[in-house]
Length: 263
Picture 1 (tube, helix red, strand yellow):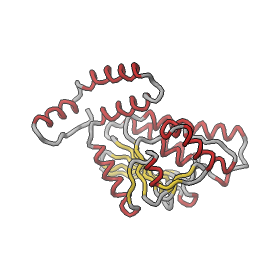
Picture 2 (picture 1 turned 180 degrees about the vertical axis):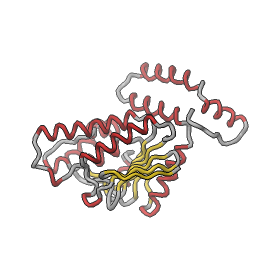
Picture 3 (picture 1 turned 60 degrees about the vertical axis):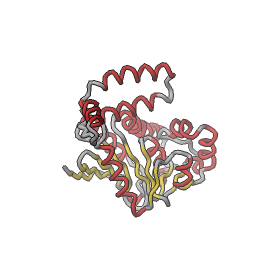
């Protein structure tokens, strides 16, 4: 099944079990707008309720993934407007983390500021070899938002994270991969095909298991070992009753590839 919907600043395309979301404000390097953020929130919340969607792929139209905040509005917004805008951005980040399905961010050009942090809110980051990442907030006298001050220190440690926040210096995709920010890099000409293949492979996996893996792995950043062990214990007792586990076990015994159905 394939369906395509164009909304304000966001393209939504469903191919099989993969939901493709494309930030579509290329004239502004996909800088965030209220319409874009609200569109993402709505689509991701709908995906949570749609069992036919098993993977989400997020990318950007035009020359880059996203420039993050809209520079044109900086310096002209009130504290109240900023507070409300960040509240919507926070809702998007929480919706992404709450989605019990893998989210893959596909980066080309650059991911800057909150655009970088949006990628960090996903579960897998694939990037073009010539892409770059920059936390540009300090250049305009701001702190990071969109969860960056939570995600990055946990990912690469507080000292390296603070260096990137303080310096606002870009890092290459190669450096990002060495820091374990990026999972895989590809030549730009191959990025889209490789990302689609990656997403389609995940979409054929045991989606219920993927959902719990995401939930427990994310919670492990703040949970104690006994808490994680108990989550694993309870969840595994549930997983052995699923059709996917029974299919996986049968396929292993029969020495064939499993045909998971997400049930």
